[in-house]
Length: 102
Image (tube, rainbow, N blue to C red; front, side, top):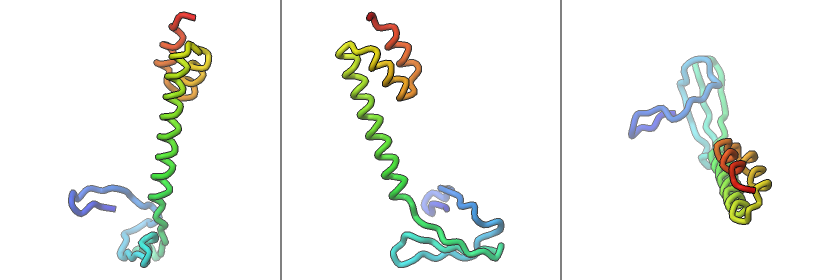
């Protein structure tokens, strides 16, 4: 998939083993059908909204965990803070938490 404005490749779709000669989209715009020199017809579903929703949920969860971590540190709950940094996979921050005076 190419962006016409920038002529840059944005994504590749690897279901065909040879050149794609035909593309069409359904009326709703959520499916693309491709036909190629490999004699295959492939129906592609647009999952952009689902991917964006998953990304949003992950970002929201991380923000909530970061806030909880800040709250634990402010309340001197270092054991809970250490658990949070390990869950967030932030080893440098884990070192800082373990260096806090208990």
